[in-house]
Image 1 (spheres, rainbow, N blue to C red):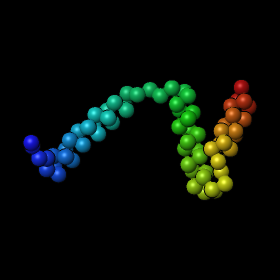
Image 2: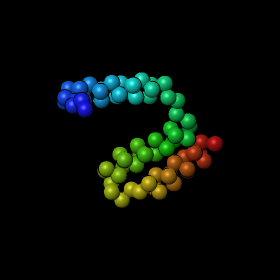
Image 3: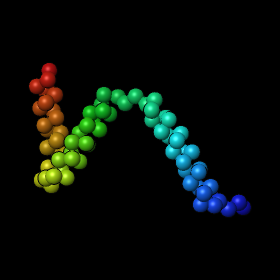
Length: 70
């Protein structure tokens, strides 16, 4: 059995991470996924400032904005 050194482990993880990053560069998110990410971002930033903000509130406001946009 071969024992990996700390350096070997970090190098392997770095190579795996590089592959994942390259794959992510070519990924094209769907409009639904982008909207989901946008709402998650909004929730995270607003909830950080005001713990009374809920995901449901963010969803409700996003739906209102989408309706107004049409």
